Structures are given as C-alpha cells and as structure tokens.
Length: 155
Image (cartoon, rainbow, N blue to C red; front, side, top):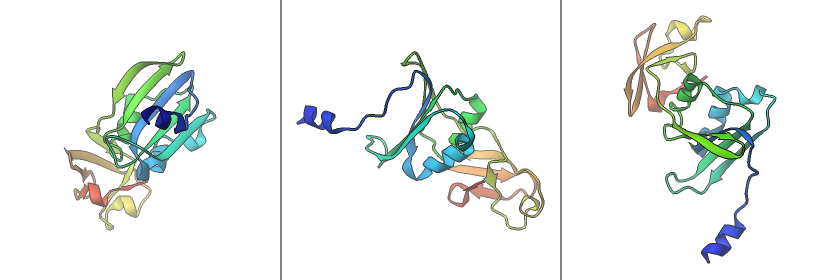
C-alpha cells in the first residue's frame, strides 16, 4: 500500500542549481513570491500549494533555478512563513540547508497597523523593530505603535 501511494504522487522535476524553499504555509505562498520579487526573475520557477505535510496542515514549496538568496532576503520570509526551510542545490544535490529567522529590523515589507502613521500618508519606507519573534510583534520607528502577527499586512 505504501509503495502504491509513492507511485501515485506527482513529482516536480529536480533543479540542477538553485534554491528550494519548503514548508511554506499554503496561504502564504504568493506573499513569499512577492517579497522575493520572483514574479520579476528571468529564472525558471516551480511552485506548488496545498501539498501534504507532516508538520503543517498543508504546505507550499518554491523551486527557483539558478538563483541564490542573501540571508536578509530569506529572513524576511520568516515573518509570514516562520517554519520555512531552504535547500541550496548544486549539481542536483542539496549542499546546504538553512532555517529562516525573523530579523531584528523589518524595513519596507510590512504596512504599519496605525492608520494615522506617517508611513500610511506619505511616501516613506516603513521601518520596524522586532520586539517579539513568537508571536511576531513589530514596533513602528515613526509612530511607535505595535503591529502584531494578526494585524500584519505585507506590502
């Protein structure tokens, strides 16, 4: 039975060089694509959502050929996918595994929760200090209001 289930699973083709981002909550897949600006990359991208997962109710995955991300880019993902894992692929082999981490500063990614904040009225880049990583709580540099996880809107 187990062998039969294995055969029934669809497989996504392997990449020779690049990055695989795994364990993304399915509902956050397109937020991750947006944050990393993958809609603008010329590289081949494969993604899947609502895949079976032992750790999540369902998960999403993104494979990006010939692209490797800087740590600060990957750490941004942690705001919306705190359990994401990164696999660095070279010659079809995983050469490195990384776990995303919430950075201490969040700049230009999240909208301030306070409707009266200057960042919501003027063309000013948002900037937050992370005051809690679990659950996520961000303090605005400009109005000092706290944006918590349930209020967070990704730009």
